[in-house]
Image (cartoon, rainbow, N blue to C red):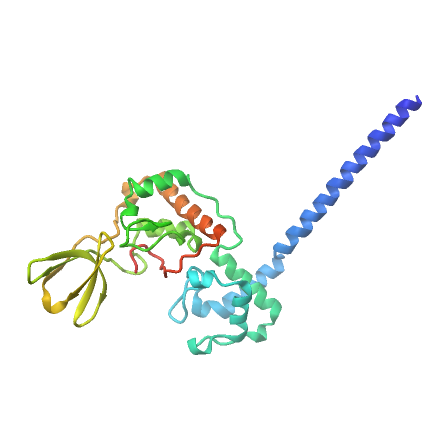
Length: 287
């Protein structure tokens, strides 16, 4: 009987120990989580302040308007630290016409920066819509994206480098840029064919142009500077450089795989601390 009681006491002590350990672990996790999570009140304050103070110039989605630039997807803004963004809100940028908002107070400024991070997609785990490995194969194969676009040092030269594209663009943004290129900007870039007076021809994308010369970049990435006085004929392809048939050329699942590939590459770049310094814009066919 005594042995049975001792066994019961040991079992009860072990159970109490497990419960206590689990409670301590839960308390630590809750405490750690609360440090990173805004309260509903803070979230509401940040959103309301942004909408009443910032949206008039930068838009409700932060992607810019007639009076202010895009601060939700521009890489140079996304890369700034919270302290840098808070300082901009406090002191403004007088030379750019942005006023100071120090009167909001440190707490409200901090909440507003967090809302901007939400608009930028920071701190929000974006699930991959497809398989990134399959997307890489489609990107370089069936879709032919790598003929113009470079990713992590591999690919073409005519389109923007997409290594870091997914870091500042949502799934819907990327999908729209693929299936509706140039829809928002109206840009429809196409290849130019220049024929010189001595019969030489150069086909490529016009990179720079002034009253006296023009610079073309050919498909191999080489730059050609031509004097306009030596150009006998200049024609542009009727087809835009960025294909407009991806909505029918690729299935929905294939589009999802390509998007997953671009997102995963960007996440990998960020994890390594590698930042592409080359300026990027929203649509693939934009300079």
